Image (tube, rainbow, N blue to C red; front, side, top):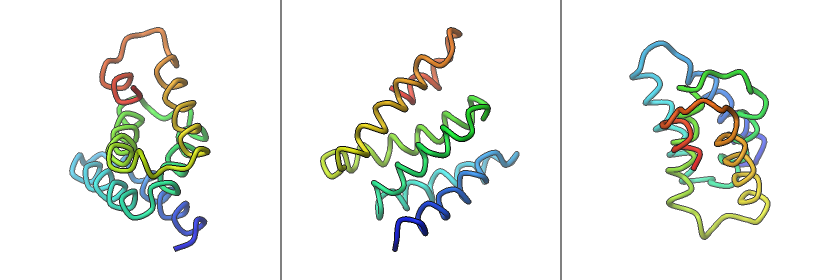
Length: 111
């Protein structure tokens, strides 16, 4: 699979994360994790880009995406290229300091 295909697939899944049905949200997260197992760098880049492009996305949905990224990272931390690692670190830092309000789930997911 090529990178543009993974990005399009990831963005399609990420667009569905805001579905009102919690089961759909969980299925989207599971699909992101599965895609991340197969193509970790591309999936993480797509999630990072999506979050940057959708800076107004509500915190609960941001948290779900960050949790999916965390799952992919925990399985593939030693396999990531330096560009991916750097982008994820910058995103996590940005997410943790995005607001002065305390939102433990969101900030913990970014951590």
